[in-house]
Length: 382
Image 1: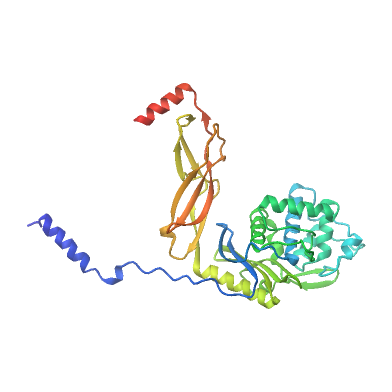
Image 2: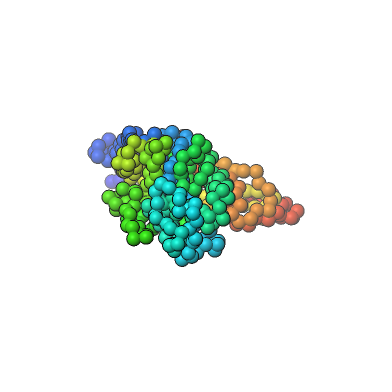
């Protein structure tokens, strides 16, 4: 004899009441605050999502010492990309480069050196002589190159930075923020992956002199891939460390540490914090329709919105299921080209915004004619 509806309902209630406690939702893991480290300024960034996971005074402009050479390297990579320099090209060594002072790769005016060797000498052993020689090769002189540095900083959105020279020797107005170093590092990773191996080389030999990479983490941690160190009395010890573990990259920028060991330990602690307590997820694939907006004056009337690149989001472990997305539309003027920005994807958890991503039209959209507009209105009523 079959159960009546009330009996079935009662049975269901009894079944739920008797469920073991182990089936209840597990509590979310506790995410501690970022570790206290030996650094006046720092930032921890996941370059896949572009999100900042931890920061301290990250927007304060401070002396960057030889982290300056990241911008010198960036512009050198640009020059190679446009064909004005070649890696195997021999670069003249000026008297100014030879006498640059400070850390050196031991360039000499009569000793040949290629662009590639100078890049290695600049990023592995922080050669000031290499930085000057490369700047002269790219722009003819260092003054013009510095103008290029500041223009590129503005283009990249490095709003708390100003460069006075190519090597990082201190001046009252030569300052960069930790967040801006992170921004520049992301640009190098994204635009010039073919040159990232230079930053992780363990040593460099030139002019019969072998020097170890000044980044101690490159020598002690196989997951660390680069990027750059710096030190002056004004700046303290600085380190921009990039790492990859299980296919996931992180960037830790620490400025103003009290010792080289302190800067390495600070970067290591921040990287460990990011890997232990955060995960990065692909929320949307490139070209995926994230939202649609109807415009009766458009052809097609249903306009598909999305991103031309994968959309990644970084969240504390266990919180991805709580992610919510909403769309903010920008004023729309027809026609639209594919890839034209028309809104913003806002991702949040518990009402707190965690990421904003530009949304673009996924197809070309034309202005509809009078009959098309009429037909679109009729269809919208159905």
